[in-house]
Amino acid sequence: YREFVYDGAQHHSILSLPGIGERAVVMDSISKRFSACGARIGCVVTRNPAILEAALKFGQARLSPPTLDMIAADAALVNTPPEYLQEVVNEYRARRDVVFEALKKIPGVEGLKPRGAFYTIVKLPVDDAEKFATWLLSDFDHNGETVMLAPANGFYATPGKGVDEVRIAFVLNLESMKRAMEILRVALEKYPGRK
Image (cartoon, rainbow, N blue to C red; front, side, top):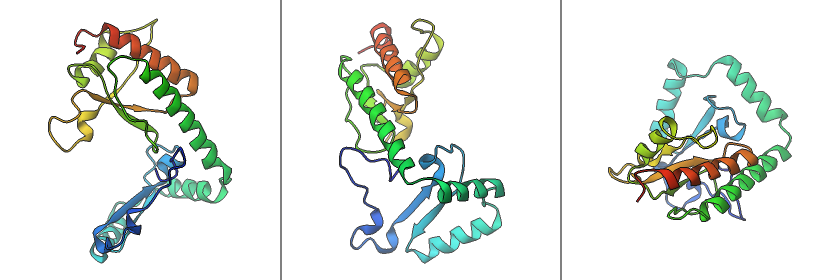
């Protein structure tokens, strides 16, 4: 996600930290940068010789991406105009802003506006985000539409964290994001497990 930074923020690699030496590993992929979901093409960057050796063995043995994916990745990296990424960043920033303007107006919703990536984790006024997400898909609609959210507890290593939080991705166009936030607002008003 290193290109996806907003509001004057800058990406800093963990490898630039003094004293990090062989303790850091950076993994990168083209999948987010070029909206190539599922493409498993990227790189591992580390100063740790043992990790480099293991990665090389796995790559040679069985984990290399398909040839067609490698050809497509090469074309994307070589032929994509430099302004492409800035256009994508601008679009994600606009989507993020739409989401947060809407979330600020929903009582009980808490979250920090991210300065990077294309998703956020927000706290909802619900008893259980997983139950809420299921309810949205099975028992709720607003004018024939609903929204799908990812419960955030699976993004935490600590048990019990994120129980009332969801991940919202800024992956729809602006009008669809606005509509999704309106659907979320109505859903939270009607949800029987609201706190």
